[in-house]
Image 1 (tube, rainbow, N blue to C red):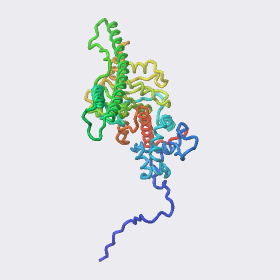
Image 2 (image 1 turned 180 degrees about the horizontal axis):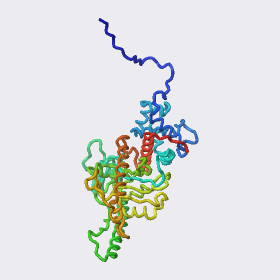
Image 3 (image 1 turned 90 degrees about the vertical axis):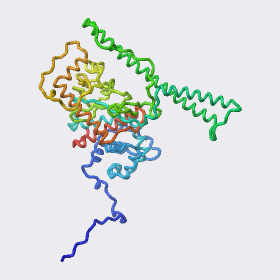
Image 4 (image 1 turned 60 degrees about the horizontal axis):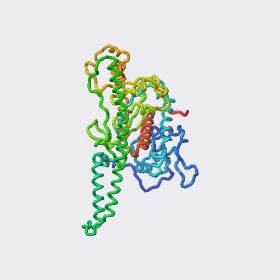
Length: 470
């Protein structure tokens, strides 16, 4: 009988030092995304980066390294500056990108926070690279626009409503008065050990000042909201009157109601991030402290060409503000596809009848009427002629309703669902970005620019783009 062979194992030696220093390029595959992002950043003009021109203090990290580090980490699902710093030690790809240097989390956070102009410029330059690579069309393009709620860097439990704030203000004022009266009374009952009247008065006074600040902000927001609602109310009244004059009949339906004065009891203020809002989330099933992030996607390349963040809980007035951020690389837009939440007659008319933006001079808006179900019924499969157009002088709502009943309108509506909605899915699921790490609308907008630029570069990498210098 033949003797059985002994099992053999790979020799794993943790004790012997490497004879030569390793080359990290040998540890990162040639088709790794980190190479693509490093090459892309080299093509960008980074003159707008904020650097210490005097050269005093410690040596600073090059803007190309810091930008590449942020973009790669955001594209691969790491957003915290402390975790990014940890990756410079733990991740081979990040260690290679940083050339075995280790930017600390303060430097990373400061670079991200102070380079708004650089990030905006880089966002547009990436799109220019995509256009030169023949991946992004720049003329007669079709855009799909939508919004998504992203959690703010604040808890909804740190918020207070206007009604509750009024109650708290009255309660605190009464307690301060009681404590001051107790301090003046020589025979008053002493407080518990460790508590003093001056300290308790100071604590309540500081809280009272914060409550009053919250009330002031809520009241100012209510005044601004009323100005907008008053303009919309007057527009509806004017449209209703013009229709009655044209037809000679009284309009059916409920008459427009004038907006209410003052704040509502449910109006909110958050002490951690006052510029965020409590918004419906999860399809309206619950509420979260959030910001409303929007993006306009070119439907063929699925690249984001316009992006914006606001504190508005819905998209009713956000069509034009989002399109105002359209990248200058886009020369002309043939159509903009939105859902019913963006439908505003005033906004659509402003776009289609004299937009000041050159790229939107001949643009049509396709806004779905009501919630559109996914899938098609048997009736949808039947071939039908387009309905006759509405009479001349019809309202924009009637024109839009007809437009969306045409074959072209239905085709474009389907394209909206399958382009912009998957982009948000990739950002939230594949990249894992579900919460902003910065606070305040200005800084949140900066971070959303970084997120969308990282998405675009990740998209270009997976499309096999060959980016070229200008």
